[in-house]
Image (cartoon, rainbow, N blue to C red):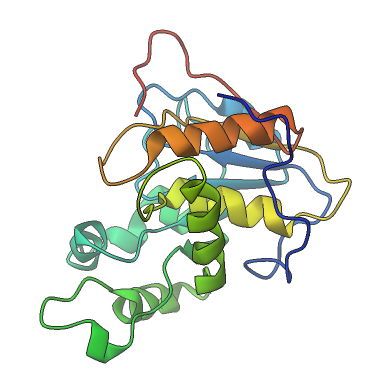
Length: 219
């Protein structure tokens, strides 16, 4: 499904994280199986996600921003890995994005789901900026996806970062180049709604969605 209208609001208070690359080229590389994104390395900024499968090979070998999910079992697993900071994609990242705001301690019991404090402590020795996407962005993401889905949508990390990028880019910026988005995975995300929003952003010239290779399954 492709919308004819611009998928972004007419006004937004500012960038969702500091240091956006302005009018420079940006590539957003998702983690769908079989992603081929070597062309992404030519962009001024290259944003990747989590374990970044294929990094250093067919998915490309540059990363300026690495988005790391800071809630749930994936971050708990990374925190338990003493070699996490030595992973190539982590070492080479120039900055990190944590997509979820920090929960107050009182809201993170009895079973913790938010590991933002521990993630910040783990990343701090690397001496690189760490940006946390704000709650206002989540509100906007739920509003956008709610028009295309039922109930209260739970946006994926990929969608949150893409929305933050497009909202923060000044007028006249080149389209964000998006690779490796298959719109499938954890069933709690509204994949059909996210696919529709990406298609609308593509139609509006905000981003260029590169299709997955035909031999690769979506993910």
